[in-house]
Image (tube, rainbow, N blue to C red; front, side, top):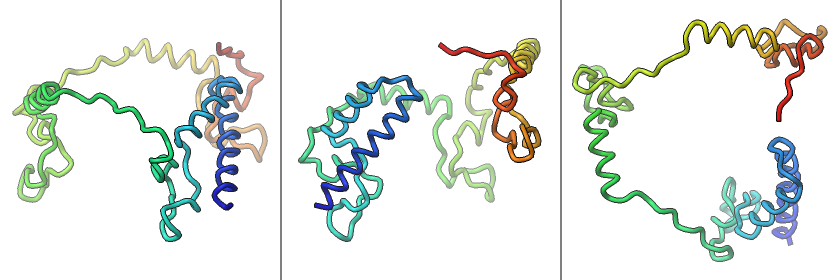
Length: 186
């Protein structure tokens, strides 16, 4: 009985969450309901903490299809890379030094190479990475001018409507909507 109650509560929570997400993503109610029905059919819903293998192993963070795979349809296998593709990627990584160094490889006897790539430890031994073109000064200034015009800049925590409403984490056009032009989204 407690499993049925937990499943119903989980379905209602997913439906409510789905409605909140639908408002954010522009999905219709029918689309959200279809997604919920598909998730219930495939077991792609997080299990409640009370559902588990036994009374000592809770399912925290696991999905229903992970806890009981025989009760749900099998997921389709995803095609992986071919042996030739993997070998080509390895050869390219070795050529460019874009491969992690072992912990024994380091700059000197005190600096370990753990967590660093070979091209970071010895950049002269590998080809240089191409530089990514940035924005020009004029482009940055134009973007700044547009952001100032529309209020699309974060307000400081000291800026607010009153002494109780801080501007921290909000943009100027959110704090003072009447001072900036309305931007319409499609």
